Length: 114
Image (cartoon, rainbow, N blue to C red; front, side, top):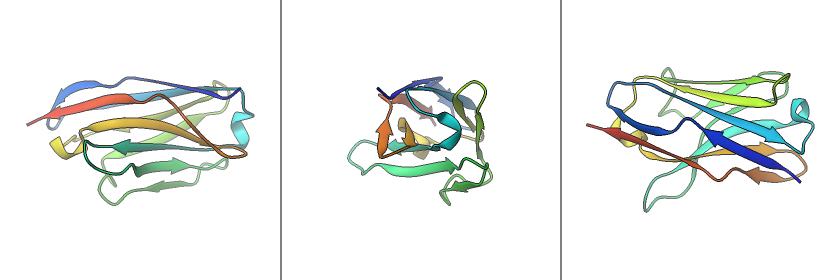
């Protein structure tokens, strides 16, 4: 059974930073493509960043230069470092694992105040 557990969300002022973490179990982590997605109220879920098994990364244009995704295959974790946060980054952030299908965490709220 695949489990993805996010942590690290919260409330921050614009310009601040937050670090999200996702702990995975039930998969061979090093083979999974890991990612972060977000969904703001009234909007569709959108890709934020992904990282492949060989550390190739991909970012949404809106977060390039501000967010960094990384993974630790020894700890089965993926992290999203978010800097220079903007109010439009406010959303529920979801961890995703692509491993014989799509698997999702329960989500963590990020709120950026102006």
